[in-house]
Image (tube, rainbow, N blue to C red; front, top):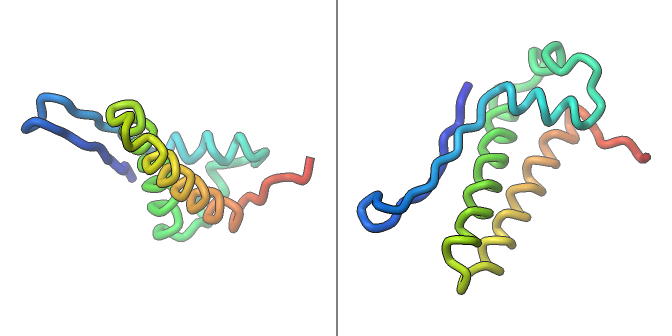
Length: 100
C-alpha cells in the first residue's frame, strides 16, 4: 500500500508531494520497540494501516504548508498535531508506547 498526499499552488508551479509506503509503517513500529514489525503488520486491519499511513503523510503536508504559508503557520502546526495524534492513536492499538 502507498499513500500519496500533497498540495500545489499556481497551477502546480509550486508543489509538495509526500509518499508514505509500508516500509515507513515498519519504521514507525520499530521505533516503538516492536521486534518483528513485519509480522505485526500482517495482523493489522487494512483500514488502520491506511489510517496510520495517511495521518503520517498529512503530518508532513502540514509541516510543509507551515513553511510555505508563514501567516497560517499556527493553523498548519495545529492540524499537523491532530494528524500525529490520530497516527499515534492507531499505532497504540497494536504497539503501545512503553512507559520508559
